[in-house]
Image (tube, rainbow, N blue to C red):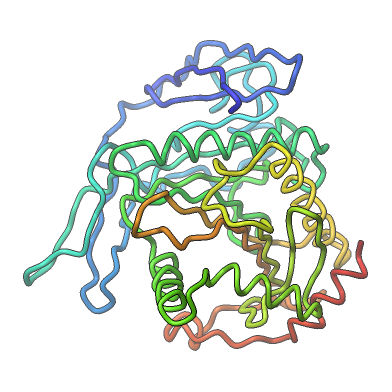
Length: 360
C-alpha cells in the first residue's frame, strides 16, 4: 500500500501527497487566513416516504465556481497563500474538502424508528483527489504509471476510510465536463465516506441477496458471465478484467468494468490486478475521448463494499456513464427519470458497444 506524505492545511484539514518513484513531495506551510472549521457543517434528514437519508449541506453554495486558470485552487501553490495544495508541484494529492457534504466522526446511520421528522449531524468524510498538477490534463492522458498511482491513492483512502468508525460505505468518483456540472476544470475527483448505505447500493445488495437465495451464486458474477457468453456488448477484455456495456444500460454511453474474479473493493486486488485495472480504465477513457470531436463528459463511479455480512455479496466494479447521446445532443434526466426513477434509453446498448470496440 502506497504510504503518502502527510501535511495539514491552515484550518486543520488533512492533506496527503502520493508520489511516483523518485519524486519527493515538498509541502510548504499553508499561510491562508482560513476561517475556523465547523464540524457540524451539514445535516442528515430522513425521508420517510422513501426510507432514505438526504444530505443537506448549505455551505456548498459558497464553494469555488469556475475560477480563471490562474486562480485555480487545485494547482500547486508554492507560496502557501493561493492554493489548497501548498507545494511547488505534486503527482497525486488528496485533501479534505473545504466545503464538505459530510464531515466529523459519528456512528453508522440506520433507519430511524418512531414518528415525526428525524434529523442527525452530517457525519462522515468528503475528500478531493487531484489526479495531476497539470491544470489542462485529464485522467485519460495520464501515463500508465501515473494512472496506477491514482488507483493506489484510491486504494489507500478506501482502506483508511473503511477502517474509520462511523463509515458504512466508501465511494470514489469523478465528474468530468461542464455538462456534468463540474465547477473546477482541473482534473480531479472526490472520495466520500458515507455513514449509511446509499440507496443504489442498498438496492443492488438486496437484489444480490435475492439472487443468491434463488440461484445459489453471486448476482454480479452471474451478470459478468452472461455478458461474456453473449459477447455483443463486450468493449474490451483481458485476463483479469472485462469492460462491457450493460444489457439494461440507463445512460446513452455506459460501460461497466469488472474484475474477472470476485473481490469487494480495491484493497482486495493483487498488484497484477491493480496494473490491469489501471490499463483497462485508461483504455475505456481513451475510447470515450475518441467518440466525438470533443472529449466526452462522464461520471465515473467505483462501487465498493465492506467485508461485512450485510455487504457480503457486493462485487467491486466501476460504472462509467455519459449524458451525451450524440455529437450535438445531451440526455436530460427529465420527468420520467427524475420524478419516477424510470430511465428511458435513447440508444441500443449493442450499438454503443460496437462503436466503442471500433475506437480501439
